[in-house]
Length: 506
Image (cartoon, rainbow, N blue to C red; front, side, top):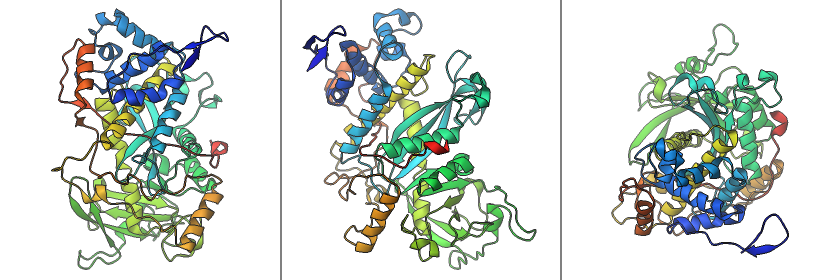
C-alpha cells in the first residue's frame, strides 16, 4: 500500500505497523485505509487492546498504556495515546461508518426487517466545568441531577444481537452563548431524530423505532417519525393525562383499570402473551388494546398495555405503549405502509428495548465508556467511537467461534424471528410499497441471517481470547493481567443507500 509523503505528490510505500494479536489484527487492519500515519494505526490497535483488557482499574489513558496512575501520565506510551486521542488528524465519523459497513457485510450481524432501532440517552458523572458538554443535568445512570455528561445513542437489536450505531453528545443550553436560542442547540429528542436519520442513511432496515417515554411523549420526535412514514413503538407514562369527559378515563392507567379481568382462566379483555427469556425462564404476560382519547384499536395510533398482573398493574412490570402498527383486521391494516402487528408482536418489539440497557452495562462496566479524562468534544467523540469499535470486535469474534457442545441453548435466543414470505405476492407488494414510500433503498431481505452458525446466548462477559492476544496484553502492560478474562462485547452494522430525510423536523 502507498501513502502520500509530506503533503506533496511523491508516493512512498506505507510503513508496516506492528501487528496486534490475532484476531484483533484482522479486525484493526480493515480500518488502516482511514488512518494515514503509522502512529495513528499503532494508536488505534493499542487503544483497542487497552479497552479489551480486564478491568482492574478505570480505563484512563494511563491504564490503557499500562503505566502508573498520575505519575505515569508523562510516560511516552501514555503521551502517545493522549496525542492519538486529542491531537491527531483521524476522522471518528469515518471510522464509525467503516465499523458499520463491516457489520452490514457480515451475515452474523447484518440488520434485517425484524429488528428494531432503539433510541435512548445515558449520562455519567464528570467533575468541573472545563470538559465540553458537562453541566448539572439529569443523569439516568444515577437517577438524579448531578454534574455530568449526557449522550444520545442509537442501537440496533433483535433477539440475538445488539450493537451501537451512532452516538451524539447533548450540550445543555447553559453551555451555549445563545442558550436555547443558539442555532446549535438541540434537545435530546431533536438529536434522536438526527440519529434515526443517520441510521436510515446508513441503509438500516428495522420493524420499528423503539424508545421509552422520554421520547415517546415528545411531539417533535413522534411527528418526525410520522412524516418519514416510519413505524414506531413508544412508551408512555401511566399518568400521561389527556382531556376527556369527566366520566371517561384520563390516563393510560385509568383506561387499563377499566378492562375486565377475572382470572387466568377467565381473562376477560386481556390476551395472554407467552414470553421466553434468554436465561431459559418462561412467563405469561397479558396485553390489551386501550381506548383513550384519540387512541384506539382501530385508530391511526394504538395504545396498548402489557403487564404480568392485570389485577394490580404493578408499576415495575406494566408498560403502556403507543404504536402506529395497525391491529390485524382493522381498517388501518389496509394501508400498505406497515404490516399489521398483533399484541404479541408489539410486546416483542418493545421488549427488545432492554438490549440498550444491556449494551450500556457492557460499554460502561467493561469497556470504559465513561472513563475518559479528556476535555475536548473531539477527544470525547473519538473515545466513544473507539469503545464502539471494541464492542463491535467482540460481537464479530464471539459469534464466529464454535459453540460449546454443553452450552445450554435458549429457545428465545435461537428462534428465527417470524418473517413475511417474500414469495407471497400480496406480502411482497406491501413490502415494496413500504420501501418506496420511505424513499430509500434497503438491501434485499436476508432470510439466512447467521445461516450455518449455531445461535446461542452471547452477551458481553468473559470469553477466552487466543493465547497470542493474552501474551501480547501481558507483555505490553506492566500491570498484572488476568489471562482468564478478557472482555468481549458486540457488533454494529450498515450498508446501502438513502432514506427519508428527517432533518426538516429538527
